[in-house]
Image (cartoon, rainbow over all chains, first blue to last red):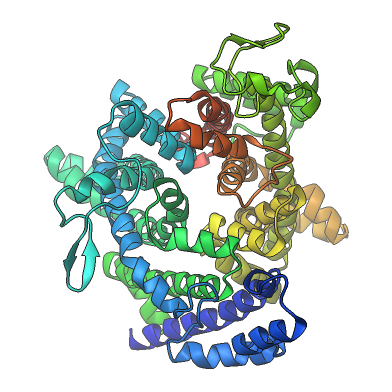
Length: 326
Length: 301
């Protein structure tokens, strides 16, 4: 297990290094940020001075070397536009995104598993068919479009919920939380539902197909022949066997939720890292883009590591294979 | 992976497939809708009431009219209303649909060609080639498509060709993985061994013998990915990263109408949204049915 963990960590470090190189070279090829930052009427000498101050006059590999050395000390560069450390800007906005993503994930799992189980047990009933048809819809509707419809219905038409912004927050453990502030959930609800819909459909479909496949297995026939009550068959034998794909996908999809929050955040004006990324791309604020991408890669790597470990805990077969390989 | 419903004798197989497909009325409806949408997209320049890109035909007096209003000069009825520049929404949607469908299908075909070739070679050759290709697939698939596409568009800038490249780059891995999985199974069958013993060339074995038997899962993935490509393009264009303003796809039309949503002028973003939605739902219905009839695991033994 220790060897398995060490090898996974080494692999993660490799991926981070390669991605940092790709991201750096890629992002530093976008346009010329000097055009944005320097007054068009500035003299060549002024332009050169700004370039030197930002380190942009150095060859690309020197810039990367300096960047990597700084990155390992937690310094991902200074934002060209805000003049503050890029990582600081992102960390400042990260809680808003995380709160949104976790809320969405909870909605998806807490609604998706029961609905999928129900549809899987009765695939030919009207209710089961309706759930599956709904999940096709949730799966295929683009997030941004659903967001617009939510705003149109609940904000413009009915006037129940605010159309954007984060609203009031309350400080807890040094971070700002919408859910703890009175009325904060009203600002969180629409974006969270918007972000959750896609994952909700995914969880429903996974649970439904897993249930259908599990019901065809021999151990199901034995469980029934043994006379186990239906509640125990579903609650223990079905649920346990469908949890593995569900946990994997839910885990891996958490990273996708953070990436997709770019869309939801831009529609609902939610002040998270997705909106920051979009603004930084259009304004050529390279350090922020690089820092965002590296952070996402880092979070991804962590998540897939965690998923692998949970996997091993849930499925004895994986544990066995891992043990043999290690 | 070859299911009983799809024997290798082409004509009988396709007929059996068509019969199996027709078993679901919903799926037939989806197919009819899809054909209608593709036809409308192809015929857009001829059936649209107005050329939405010809600024000479636009009248600023006609801007922001609700659905069903007549134009100022009385020659035309705006069935779906007009946008902020007096453009007929129906015409804009038909042309937008044309762009969205063209981008979605061409990106899917290119990604299919690239991913399929790589997956076929990886699955057939095995060894170091396989390890290298699958490593690339793993890294690619560990990032969500939207992130890959956003990074590439941030690098390249806007443009139809660039968004197609971004879509291909974010989707090829699905085909590579699917093809490789099927090729691994099929590659061990006797008919491949027989073909090899007959001394057939490797490309001939790959594309004439191995590929046709790997197709069923690929068809399902491709049908789903067309819908995903169209939705992704719309999302990127909505965010302002995709197609340039001169080629408004459905996503850009929706984005342009977004600002008017708050004042209750719903038609500018709702109608292009409905067009996008119908396209995606139709594609998904078709893909879902194909998966049902082509998946051997769900068939009674």
